[in-house]
Amino acid sequence: MKAKTLFPGLILVLGCLISACQKGELNPSQPGNLVPLTVDQDPSLPGISANGTLLHAEAFGQPDSALLVVIHGGPGSDYRYLLNCKEFAGEGFRVVFYDQRGSGLSRRHPKDSYSIELMIDDLRAVIEHYKTRPNQKVFLLGHSWGGMLATAYINEHPAEIDGAILCEPGGFTYTQIEEYLSRSQHFGMFSETLNDAVYLDQFITGKEDQHEILDYKFGLWAAADEAEDSPIGNEGPLPFWRSGAVVNDALFEIAEEQGFDFTANLSQFDTKTLFVYSENNTAYGVQHAQKVAAAYPNVQLFRVDDAGHDMLSFPRGWQHFHPVGLAYLNSLK
Image (cartoon, rainbow, N blue to C red; front, side, top):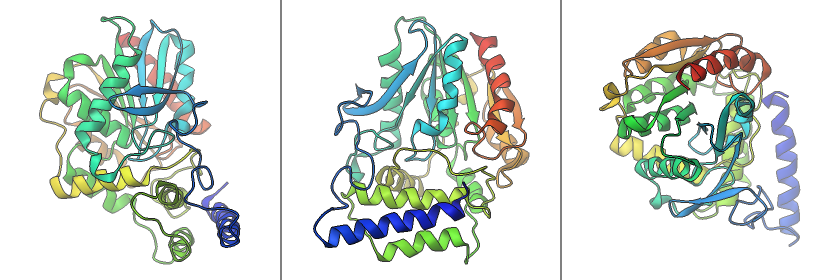
């Protein structure tokens, strides 16, 4: 289903919610009315306690197998769109998924509590939670922002990671991110997708602590990536549970104000890194892939044909990526 058909349905649902709220039947700011409950609100969800928060998380495969920690994009997405990676669990790996702090179905926090360093510490806590023995190998598979977070972790702890698959990380410095976003977020002024998202703003607004409303709106904005006029080449809308608006805003604001550079210690990581980009993401391309990947001393560059930025989510991209990803992991296991 294309985004052009997705938005009218969302607008209809929102209209019903607003109407019901006006009648006193439904409050959109109350948990569970607009977006799914988070792991601290619904104890039936799989989750872990890590680094002072509650994270929506689960793992598949034998506990003593090499760990493969899957890191979703965003900031503010969730791991639902990466569940194809469960396939690695039947191929000799313990596959770990988690929604990052403030993202997906994990606990929400105030905007001023977030930092990039905190996200790195959370990842370390996830790894420590699932490791069953000291010499257990640990691999990271990061998509988009997840590839950036994986790199930030390796930059600080290069000796702790045994291999990494990085799928179209926007950049490892703020300058690289600016370059990529200038191309990837280009939409026509009269794009139907963009206009639909902006149109909703006049009906529902949220304050900084109204996570339900903000997450709902952010989910609509994120759907613009699947529009036909988006340069990132996605096949269709990515499946997700719930977007994290506040963490996205917080981390982008930190990047804009403070900048970042995740490359200072990458020269110490001499293990081969699998760096993946897609054929249909015209905003990325081989030149940007080469520029970003150059921070790693030992890189295998691979293009996923017949797919866009969503290369891990739909059959076309997955069938091209999976055998290469598996061969890479097996070569280091």
